[in-house]
Amino acid sequence: MAAVANGNTVQIHYTGTLTDGDIFDSSEGRSPLEFVVGSGQVIPGFDTGVMGMNVGEKKTFTIPCAEAYGVSDPRMVQDVPRSEMPADMQLEVGMRLSASGPDGRELQLVVIEISDEVVRLDANHPLAGEDLTFAIEVVAIS
Picture 1: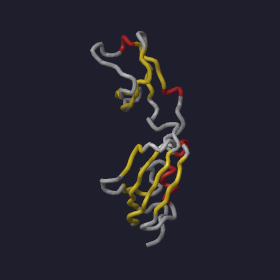
Picture 2 (picture 1 turned 90 degrees about the horizontal axis):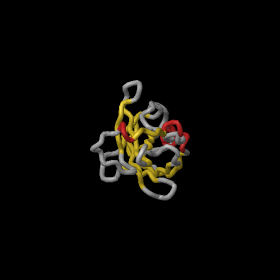
Picture 3 (picture 1 turned 60 degrees about the vertical axis):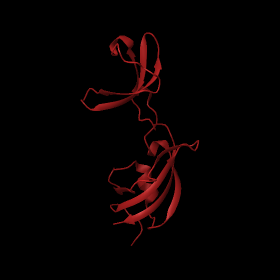
């Protein structure tokens, strides 16, 4: 089989780590990740990273945040009056919440700060602003 090219369906095993070495995701113990290269199913830097690889080949590469989940956008951080939060909700920093955006899409939010008056919520992807390192192995190409 030829090397991975745009439009191929690939199966890979992977481990993703942050710059400090912490693992944020892995296919270990699961089926390989399958995706069509160049279709937008994975972050752009991941498509680029598998290009040209062959079945059985292993590789480690780093994806800059701009080619992963983007830079952290300060406009995605909002202060919400505490009075607008459910009174019985036990808020904690790091807590994940869901809300509907103005267009009706569901937003994933993280509580990043709590005061008596406001709750600061971050709607950036949890990995925004992070450079990501992946150790991958190509299992199949079709």
